[in-house]
Length: 380
Image (cartoon, rainbow, N blue to C red; front, side, top):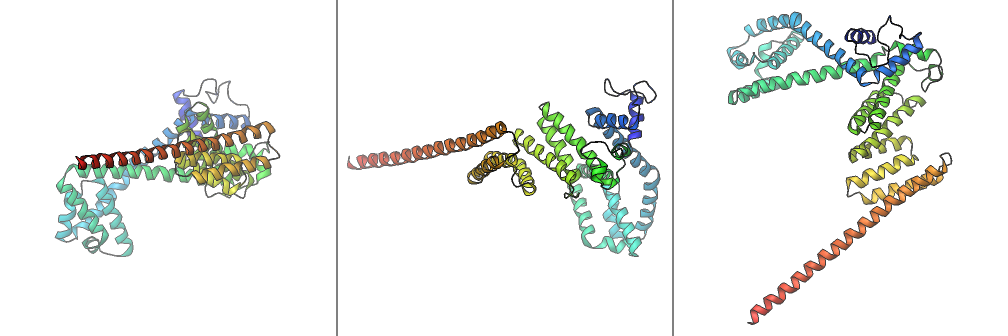
């Protein structure tokens, strides 16, 4: 995959400024480790991600073209043969719908299942859920003919999205990044050095890919692009979900991604996302006072969570005071931040009570005056 991206980027002369442009040029990395460093940096850049997306789009386009040219004609021929032997009732039902790709796909799938299970397509289409689905589609299209094309477009979009997810899942499990793997085998002093980790090849690949998303997210965050940063951190977290969190390095990277996700969620006012991220993190590190503080901020932002938010800040203060490793000034600032948030909550609570008191008093006064006015009119 990397080789394909190299070729494509060389042809388009699209390498980032100052980086290696030509495999045979003077700027080429001198050894495999330097080349691996360069590619890790490049893939974490916007240009690298665009190249990967372009490669995926091209592969999807080629796969669809292969299907259109070779597979689909055979499938439709087999389907036509099977439909010839169906009843007039089934033919009348499906005939107006055969021009739509999604109906063709449904019928082709049904025909294959019937063939495998030695069932007649006619009986399969005469009753059951598939029959109901086709009848509903026919009814909607008969009322509004444009509905058929909308349903067809929705089906294509869902197919492309599913294909993309399957492609990403394949890459996630395949461990093809041999450049990074070779670097790890050199026993370099990195966070995920192979001589310390001794993971499977797939785990090495996942760690490297997740670390790329972490790097990209941090860059977006520094640039103030918090929505994009949040997306990258979430992508990195998904890469490691299902991995062995007992592995020290997997867990460390997983927690870094979650922590950064929580901060980005606060910046974008995605308070429920922040709360979820912090809750997950605290399950693995119960005394992480930063996560506890952010949990409090997220609960404050959600509203109607005052008791839980207060508890989070008080617990964070206790964990801060018990922290014997972090710099004292940092701990002081953190405790002051917690106290400040508690003070804000106290002030808001006081203002809320004052407002309620004034509103209640105003209601009472209006009631008294209204009663007096009524009595006055009655006496006259």
